[in-house]
Amino acid sequence: MRKVWRLNLATLQWGQMPNLNATRRNHGCCIVRGSLVALGGEYDGYDWRKGCTGRVDKKEVFTSSVEVLPPGEQKAFVDLPPLSCGSLAGTQAVAMEESNSTAGTVLLLGGGHKNGDVVSTVYLVDLATGVCTPQSSLLIARHWFAAARLPDGRIACAGGCHEMHRVMRSAEVMAVDGTWTKLPSMLAARAGCRGCVLSDGRFAVLGGRDNSEPKLASCEVIAVGDVDATWKPMPPMYEARDWFACAAVAGCIIVAGGHEISSAELFDEGLNRWFRLPVALPTHYGLIHMGCVLL
Image (cartoon, rainbow, N blue to C red; front, side, top):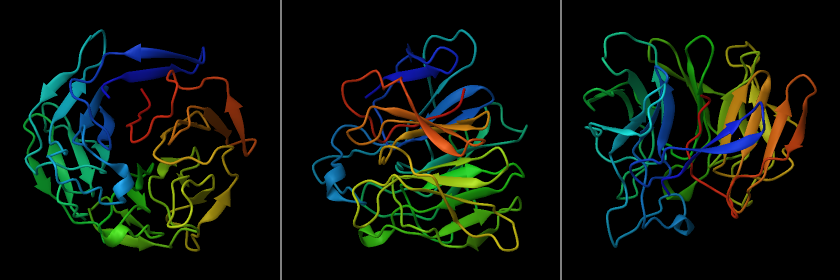
């Protein structure tokens, strides 16, 4: 769909924002210089029941389009030049700090092509031109994975799908110089999971699905960089979720939606527990494969 909703955390009310110009899911999404950016993804015709590759022969369903909702009182998304690297879906997009581009840059990690190939590519995307400059590749090709930028500028990635529908436990981290290093494997294999950074800098990965469970409620966390860094379990969510919305703010994690789920929850880091929120998504059904950012 094209719809965009915003949850006001002060009033716990959902409000509708301007629609996307293009229907899309499984797209990259991030905030760049205050603007909301959506990159790539899929449109009508995708069949999630076909597994990690989601191969569809009847028509092209992936897109290279890019659009942005500028900050302030702008009332509509604006189309930007398409990705020069072609159509990608199931990627992760991370805003980069720089001053050379007129529109900002985004690091686009992994994902899949329309032919079903899962890729390890990493591109630095100049939003002003759409030019995708190759960077050091991921150690393992992956899509539908979790990723987040750590406070020191490193980028952590975990889980996702690899070739042959294999859901992974592997994790890796990109240093500020662009080199990738293997991290300890997660406690559970996860695809369709979500990642965020806690207030103390730890990298948390939540939910998803593995090769046997359709949805997971479990969560885990790692202190990347510690000498004895290992994944440790977090309290599980009330609802098992995959491909849901997730954002960290003010010592809390907000999650909403997922396959056939419209509920929302909040994790309080200080209390180390989850709370149900009385703010179900403004739909009569669950939402999946959506992008999510903190405005």
